[in-house]
Image 1 (tube, rainbow, N blue to C red):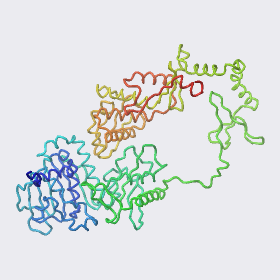
Image 2: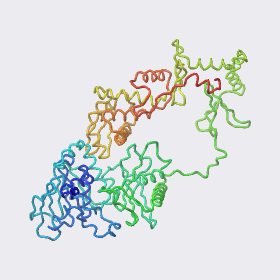
Image 3: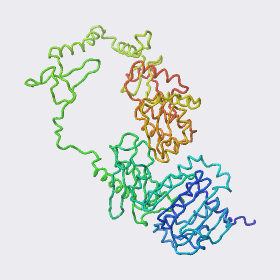
Image 4: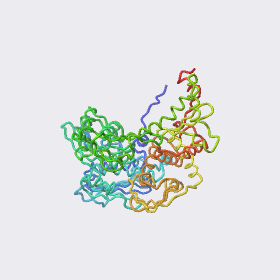
Length: 622
């Protein structure tokens, strides 16, 4: 049998490696920025065209490279970061694998200009598909400039899988922000299509956060620091009252390297327990400094995953540090030890059915009936009734029950109970009886009588289904009505969210939103959908963007489908209030006019039915 195993050519091996290292333009941005940091640059410029598809260029003032190093950096597994196996467990640099430049050179056209500090001339190198097309001396500034052009020009299938410019630019922004946050002492700038997006001078961490996310963060941050000897935790956490529906501004850095860790995020979230509203997410930028020998970052080529030698200790220290920071700024709830809980004032008892029972004061009290004198009960107004009138009220309250008991034969108790149930849920036969069609329970559920028994409707889930079908129709027909705001509102978004809104601008307008660019990452909101209550418009927009991103990460949905689901879910989450008879009946009618009334778009049940036989079984009448 002939030999069939052979070594792959270098250019083919590099293209295979590029599949993991270079997934999109943002991957190139990450690798080039990290190389500039490792080169000890104090000023880094990122230039992007067409979201990185046409050009990604990084210019730094670092140490530069010699002619030989410039050629070697495009070879596989060629690096200046490590030399021995022991170095692999003492990594302090951002890169160390020696794969990035070779992978980039395999799938793009690369121009490299570099000059070591103090040298008379530099080097210019052109790479196309792992092949050196040109190498020559060049006049250039000290440092390195790398321009990556026409990414995936020789891998058409990969280029076709790239997303829209708005989506790819969001990923580029994410990578830029992470590196800029990790190194506030380095000046950064970002230009996209010749427009300046960021210009961040060298500064301290708090000013860098404000420079990236906006001036509104000035008073939203609480400083966090804890040094245990085992590790150091420092950074900033957002105050709970400024928590958002979006979870984008959450960053963990281990030895200045951005990492993703659900485990560490849980440590922070538990420290905020009891301080955040439902589905709100705090802002945090936290740095962990730990002995490199206690961690392993060689888990994935992107180096965003990390393993700790003692992760439980790390969890406990991070949790305690955040808890301490919240307490130091008087954010965590405290107990009032001066209050005598044995003599806490009791609220007056109020009975349903239009009759309020309010107890009179004890004999000897100085309170007078009909006065508004303080009684020790907040919001309590003394009754104007006498004890005789109060007794009369109780008698009137129980009189219908006594009358029913006198008229009811002892042998027909079960039948009478069913008659009362039928009466409460009877379908309306006249206009006067229409109010009995549905009954609301705890402002969450509706009970409706049906021929076979009864139906329980989740009013929030029902509203979500109704709104979804309404908005998906508006998006397809482009007929969404809008109501103008009396006072237009400015809404400052995170850069990634601003790009997402720009990408979905047409769909938002089809639903009824009206807005315009107000400079930077700020928009001017002029109108909202006509059927949405004009209140907390900024919060609604943030919630909608967050829900859209959550849907996108969990499901592969078309833009309009995703947006309709997000809008319906967010508006329905506010739908928990007492409904009038007319509103309850209208909700039931609208639900059964839907194409799929039984389930929400996410698959949750909107209603359940209970047969009459099941009710009998509950009362052991089988």
